Image (cartoon, rainbow, N blue to C red; front, side, top):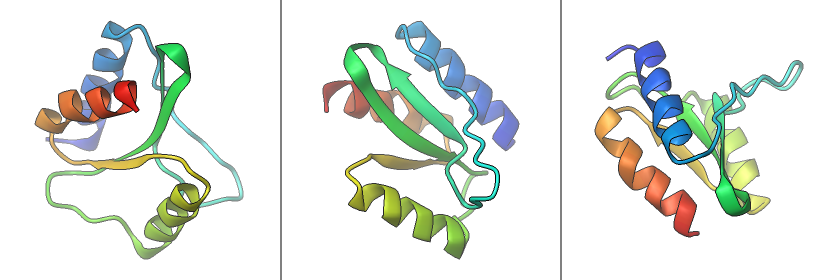
Length: 93
């Protein structure tokens, strides 16, 4: 499945839960995750979207680590079947 298709499925699922998943763009700060998932009750996480089996680049891994050290959840999504479980984790955190 293409990244674009997976991102669309993610944004649709987030919207169905009453949230938003805007594209996260950070000029001058490469390697940040693709989407910011914002759910009701102030729940949020960063999501990196990849094609099935594709791994994050070293710079992306470094950014994910930085965000996690700051206390944020970061997910790497490469299969649409992961979406439900991931959103459940975010909403119950």
